[in-house]
Amino acid sequence: MKTYHLKPFTTPATLASDPLARKPHPNSPAARSAAAVTDRIAPAPAMPPPLPGSRLPAPRSPGQPLPTAVVDPAQPALKLGLDVHLEFLMAVAQRDHAAPQAPRKFTREQLVAQVRKWVADGLSVFCVQEACGFGFVLHRELVAAGAQSFLITPIALNGKRKTDKLDARALCLRLSRWVDGNRDELSPIRIPSETEQHRREGTRRREFLTGEIRRLANRGHGQVAEYCHVKLMHRWWGPRNWKKLSDLDPWVLAVLAELRELILAVEAQLIKLEAELIARVKDQPRPKALGELTLVTLDAELCDWHRFGNRKQIGSYTGCCPGEHSSGGKRRVGSIDRMGNGRVRALLVEAVWRFLRWQPGWKAAQRLKVKLTSGTALKKKTVIALARQLAIDLWRWRTGRCTLAELGWLPA
Image 1: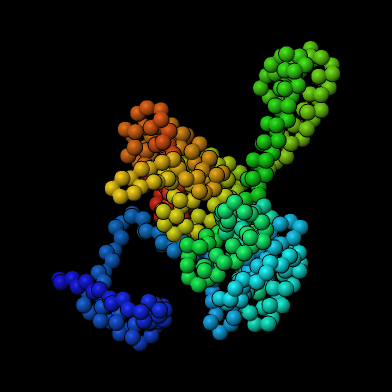
Image 2: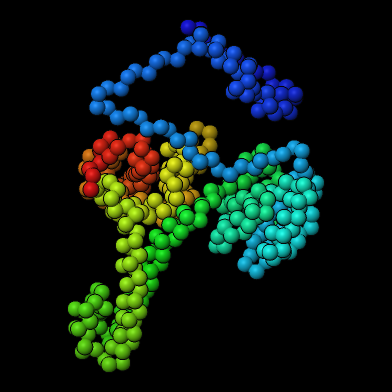
C-alpha cells in the first residue's frame, strides 16, 4: 500500500485562522462521509474474541484535563490578576486587550461583590491567583459569583523589585496571554473537592501529630541531658520506662511529668486517627511491602488516580524526573527537579526500599538489577528512578490497567 505524505501550505491566512473552526464536527455530513470512505479503503480489523480465562483490558480513562479558559467572543473579557493576602487582596484588571488598569485594594467580600456586579453587567471575568496557604475559599466564592477562577503554582513574577502591585500586574498580563492561547504563560492546578480536601487533611493531621510527639519527646531528652547529664531511653514516657525514672531529680521529674501528660494526650488522638485512616483501605487488596497507612496516604495526596491520563503525567507529578542541561550534541542530566508533591515523593522512596526486600519479583527492579548491586551512589540514584517507576506501577494498578501479578508483586 502506498503512503502519501501531505505537506500543508503555511500562509498568513492559515496562521491567522482558527484551526478548530475549519475542523468539521464529528456528526456533520462531511465527517460521516469521510469516515465511510476511510472504512472502505482501510477497514478497521475485527477484535479477536478473548481467550478463555484471560482478563479483559480495562477501559482507558482519558484523565481529568486541567482547567482551561472558556472564551465567549460575544462578551467582553475582564482579566483579573490577584495578589492574595489574609487581610486584603491587590487586584489589577484588564479589559480585553487594553492596557492594564491601576491596582486596586479589596477585601475578600468586596472583591466577590464587585465580580458579581461585573458578571451582571455582561462581562466574562477571568481571575488568577497563586496557590498559597489560604486554601480554595476565595476560588470557590469567585466561581459562585460567576467568574472563571484559576490557581497556579507559585512562580517568580518579577526581578529584584517585588511589590503587591507589581505581582498583581504581572499575573494579569500572564493571564491575558494565557487566555489568548499561550499555554506556557500559566500552569493551572487541579482544584480538589471539599471531600478530597477533608480526606487529605486526615493524613496530614497524622503527620502533624507525629511531629508534635517527637518534639515533646526531644524536649524531655534535652531537659534530662541539661540538668542530670543522663541519656533517656527511647519512649521514656511509656509505662515501663516511666517507672525507671524515679531516681531523677524531683524538679526534672516534675517537668517530665507535664511533658508526659501532653504526649499521652496527643498519642490518644493519633491512635484514634490512624484507626480511622486504616479503615478506608482495610478490605482492599494491596501488594506486600506497601502498608495500609502508606496506601491511604498516597490515595489522599493524589485525590484521584484517574486524574492522570498517561504514565508521563504521574511520573512528573512525583518530582523524581532528572534535571537536564543539554545543548548541541552534548547532553547532561543532573539531579531530580523536585517539582511535585514532596509528601508523595518521600513515601515512594521509602516504599522502594521495602519493595526491594519483600518483592523480589518486581519487574521494574529486575531491569535495574545490575545498577542496584553497584556502588552506594549509583544504588541511591537507581532507587530514585524506581520511585518514579513505582508511582507509575501503582497508578496502573489502582486504575485497573494491570494486576499485581502482572507487575511481579506478591499480595499482602
